[in-house]
Length: 234
Image (cartoon, rainbow, N blue to C red; front, side):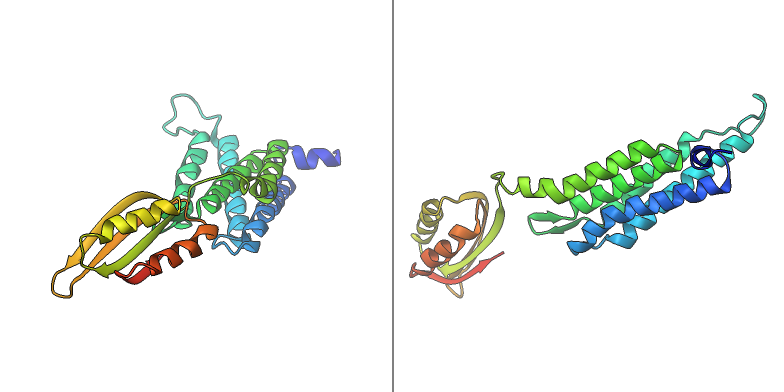
């Protein structure tokens, strides 16, 4: 038997081992990039996802090859695509665990997408689609390693929360709004809380385009207002 047929034939233990090793390698390559960036789902997680999904697809294929030729009137009905559908659903729960919402910032979306892609790679390898699996792996690594640098040149809004505690006075809010306008900040959301007994009022601003360049200028401008007692920036 030709040595290539041992890897590309749909039967045999050697083929199964080859698929598992390839799935582990491709998933581990994506996981290394996530590990370098300190993400919670890193090298081991991505490797386990691709290997586990690959094994599920191999088992599904084996069941179909073994029992798929049953008579049409048999009680047993086999659908190999059901395993793939359940994998897509199940990997969503794992990806959701990698997503963290921190105030107005959402982190972990790229890692969740990587887990989803890793599952797809494992499925492709599990059914013998080696070339698509290799191509998607290369595309995913290109996205993670190179497109991130391109993304930095895109101008996008950044949202921050600004909490200001001031003396209770009628002219405080107009002065704060004017200060934000001078710093080219757009107020996305606004709230306030008055404390009559202490004579203080707390303003909560959610502002957009608060980048590092104007953050220091903003804090300096707010500090110059006489009514301002306390500034919190998140």
